[in-house]
Length: 238
Image (tube, rainbow, N blue to C red; front, side):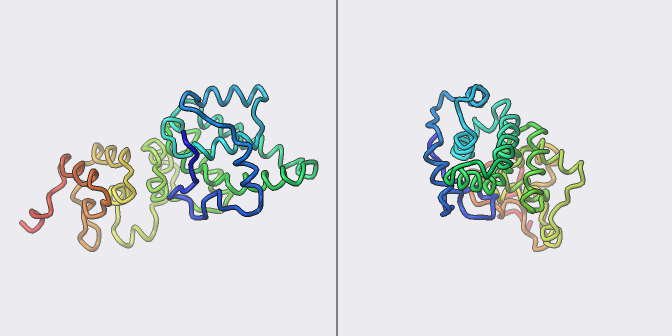
């Protein structure tokens, strides 16, 4: 679990470490070194025992935001929930903190939205719910296209669809469907699930006649689609 820049494709702002207020530097400095043997359960235990501060936990979560094994670990959504509550508690006593701590807390509050994607990556519906809360708090409207683009899981996609979260209007106007979107953002789990639900999606065209295959930006994805029944381009006019 090396130190990772928060270059989440799904976030619309700058990477977290680009923060120049001083808060990011303190978070990075205080973030404990994490090894491959560390798990969500161990991190939770350390935080509950008071071995990690809120600032340290925030840095740790940021560092591991692209580690799929960490994000899929049981209890990840709960850990983020505890972190968000603790961060709120620290924010309430903001005036009692040192200048460096205030900068760090301000930075972490701004960076909370970067946890939306990781929360939707897992299969825990509780994580999906929390992702919506953080997205709304940051005034970033969530739609089903973003769920797919953020590498959201089929579980989150189904949850939000049942809750009435809309398909993006721009995609509707272009005739872009879920499989087009999942292929474009290389969300392999969503691609697999969508094909299982409806194999006909493999050859569904947008309003310009483009099939999901043309949205792929990855050779492995092209091979995957062809293997599962996508019509090869040379046969499209037959």
